[in-house]
Image (cartoon, rainbow, N blue to C red; front, side):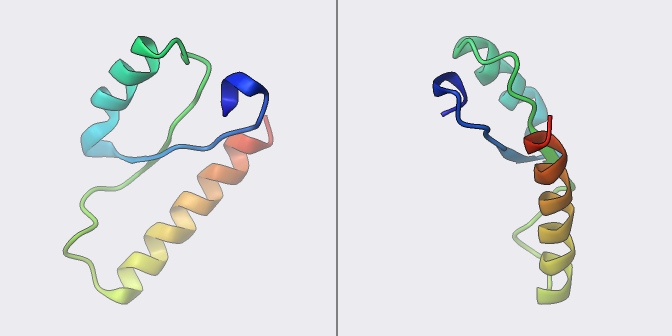
Length: 66
């Protein structure tokens, strides 16, 4: 979507940041800045998930405003 001019926010946990960077390079999307949130997600309580969602939303707003 970013290549088509649509502002895009990709969310990744910090444990997978290296893999996200490799994919950005492989896809020629180096300008795409990932929104990085804290890992893990699968073992969180509802309250912790809400906090991670807020973390992601804040990062997405920052990335999309660029």
